[in-house]
Length: 354
Image: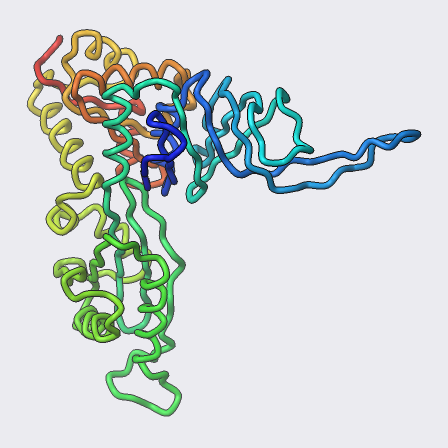
């Protein structure tokens, strides 16, 4: 998440969420009576003197609303903020009317609490604002997949095919592999962020050849690109094999994904040993939170199907206020499925409570 102080007041921040994890962070931060400023669309109807109002024209307008409610939609990829309009840059928009903002990844808003921000709120913003992402490339001579790992969320771009016949020598109908490398490099360049790193893997020596082609373009510094051995699968399957591999934990040791994976491995080891320094499910985690015993908690978006959203937000905020770490994972990933199968929420404890 991009976070900057706003010039509106000392109590305001300008933020741009970059993924679903950031949207949930904002869901935990935005409260009733906060002021939120954003660009939105609103239908303006012209009222005629002797006739019905027309269908109206949809215009872009900047509004400031006093928040009444915020909630995530069922897919957890959009945050809906509802409230009353208190300021607007268009005189055709009436103040005091209700409006709903629909916030997605990449949209920008300004949050003004009208008070000093709490330490836990600042902590959540700063933690979301410094996370780096990784670009994964699973490549061989015939196909390649590119994925962006942001936080604990994975977005895979459809496979890129070389058209190579599989022969080791160049034939008349065999496309030049350099064109294939150029297509992949363009895809990587189009999604890489300022602080992102690139990890290349796959069978054979194609990964090293692509590494030379990528850094040779001089668009991405050599220090930001890493070639990983040990994952001999290319394409989309290669991405998910890598995300389950020990090589991922080593290459992405500073990432949220690696931290969550290591934490789950510790929990499963405790289960096998019969240790009780973990909690699973809303009931057990809530009890551990009351005793301030939680060290780290991971939850999947599947928890929203069974738990009350407001109660979950209060629980996670109370956990973070005592210095514990919280991570959200996408149930569409392998790690997310593991968390979902364990009740949707798992906590690693400082000490046993059972």
